[in-house]
Length: 558
Image (cartoon, rainbow, N blue to C red; front, side, top):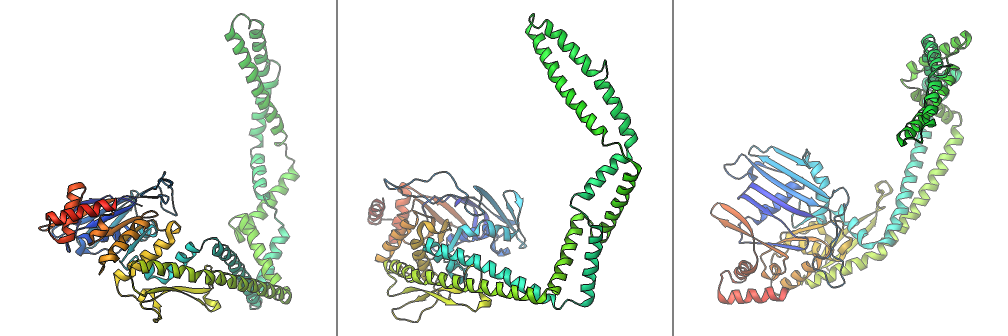
């Protein structure tokens, strides 16, 4: 969700801020005032392309900054039984608060930061773009990309398709692994004689030494002790004597503790000190036990030491050849053993791998049929619901259709065995065509509005920005459009650039973009100023009649 956008030196805008609300935010203003520049600013924050001509004339650079919050869906106009907005949640890869700054210099160079850290345009696109849909702007328009249609439909379809899709995805992964195993077995038959001889030599060489896990580390430890045996023996002997001999530290400590305990009843401090000495005595006894046990490790006989040195040297030789670590030596042995096994037991391995691959493919085909069946069952209902919303928008006999077509096996993906796409027919019984081929930005925006309305809270996109949704709209269609935007604002943050007073009156926040000479200002309006803007939108002039009409519309929208 967009919390705030600040723009400096972008096109006609010297400096401006926009703070859209959770529900419906409307932007109005005369044509050419600079409303589209705000859409351009948002595209920059989403990682869109920048150019030098975006920079305001006479300025060195433009700067666009934005703060975004990840919020759970909520009701912007809560009814009595609605759940109000609560604390922020973190959807996807968008943190609770993300601050983006994008700068473009007059020579076209672009720089960006994400939460104060330098970021690439790809990182901006990954962090921000998935949560915002620019409707009517083809750069980020979901419906203009057939690849997004399946995720939209599956989000609406819910559990029935989700279960089938999960089963299919698991089967797809198993089939891929089985195919990879089969290819490995087949490739083994092409292993050259020299490669096979090399594998046999490597395995035999490592097996002759027979290294054990952890052996090298243990030898390294034991030899370090042996090399310092004299110094260790002297230190241990001195420590044992100082701790445990007659008159040593333990005797002195016990004597002191006993003396204080004999007069402990005189003063509490003496009792506490005696207790501390006893506790210190326990620590000294533990240390003495450790020293005593370690003394046994220092005693090496010459034969054992020679064996360990030779063994250590042999393991180091393996590491120099197949290392540099012992883990690499073990991996090399496993690799050689696998290559030899594939060749020696080629026929048996091939039969087993082929059988496993066939079984995995059969399971995948079954899962694919089930997934297609689940989607095919619900697709007409989805299309009908979207088409019904399109009827509310007075789009005539236009209808949305869902096309599901099984792809060749080589084109299957982990998401689907079939190509899925929304088709659009502008008239009843007309020839449906891909939605991406629709030329009218306003038309495709209204289709997307219908799709989003059907999706409701299931939609993963949090913010919808409509720029051309009211193109060529008026009368009853304008009222229907406004009502649908209000419904959509229950589950999304909606920002609408509009020329329709019927839409503007429903805004939870209303900004006016005004052109004053070579400057563009963005002002939030309310009360009288809002009445005046609605009046201007209605008649082009502020008159007593248009003001009365504006007040009437605003009152009816409350």
